[in-house]
Image (cartoon, rainbow, N blue to C red; front, top):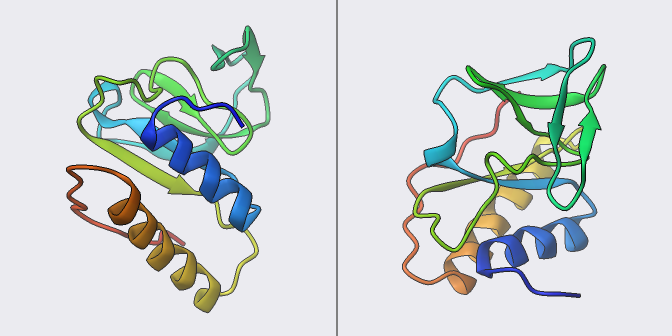
Length: 128
């Protein structure tokens, strides 16, 4: 696999080992009012390494500026860069029981602390 930067590489690794979609987003590029929703008619964004992606009826994360990510493709607006200082890792854990979700959550913390430099985990939550 190609390498991007440590956080993106960790995100891709987590997706591969758990066979789940993961997304990592730069918190300085999104607002605090994030919702999980479905794309409205005509909704699009520029995907990372892609042109405009049709988001209609797609599951996605959205803030006050609009959609920025989801389990199938993320936007360039909130993407991780070498300048990212604050980020969130989202695991889209549909269909997993609570024990498996807790295992994934604990592993994300373990891998992040072991792989990323100068990391401080502020909070981990599972939203149901």
